[in-house]
Structure formats: C-alpha cells, structure tokens
Amino acid sequence: MFKTVRGSMTVEASFLMPMIMFLIMGCILAVFYYHDKNILSGAAYETAVVGSTKARETGGVTEGELEQLFRERVKGKCIMFSNVRAAVSVGKDEIEVTAAADRRSMKVSVTKRAAVTEPEKYIRNMRRLK
Image (cartoon, rainbow, N blue to C red; front, side, top):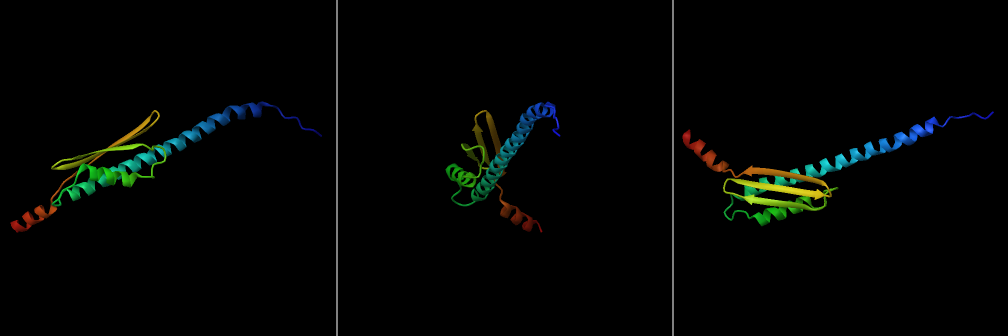
C-alpha cells in the first residue's frame, strides 16, 4: 500500500538547484550588463554626431553642452550602472565622447567619435567641377 521512495533524488536535486540558479542569475546579470553597455554606446554616438553637426554652426558647440546632452540621453535608462560619467573632447576636425560607468568590481567604458564634416563645401566643389 505504501510506496517507498529512496532519498537519492532529493540529494541530487539539492546539489543541482543551486547550480541551475547560479546559471540563471549569471545570464540575467550578463543581459543587464550588455543592456547598459548598449545604452551608453548609443548615447555616446548620438552625442558625438549631434556635436559634429552643431560644430559647423556659427556659434559652435561647447563640451559642457554635449555633456549635458549625454546625461539627458542616459538619465533613467541604465539598469545596473547608476553612476555614469562622460568626457567630451571637441576638436576642430573631430568630436570624441568617452563614457564610463562602474558598480563594485564591474566596469564598462565606451568611446565614440564623429568627424566634423562640411558636406556643403564638398557639394559646391563638385558642382564647380562640372
């Protein structure tokens, strides 16, 4: 009437469950890390491109304006890294945005560059050649 069950299944499950949970949590942590890295990368690239476009205007662009723009793009979007820092370098020919964030022993850093181009000058030169 009573069925006897051996305890080997319980012992095996008690060994496997922590390993399975560790793998699941590691996968979730990796997804959060790459999510935040993509957010930083996209915001840094957008900031560099906007800076390269604004640099052609008469007033130009300052590093402070671009850092503020970067902070607006990142604000509230990162899951794991909360303290994001950005360094913007405005040159005559290039805009460079370096973003970094860290949390305990994990760090992420991205650098994006955009050339300051003058397409209207190129188009005018092409028309002159015709």
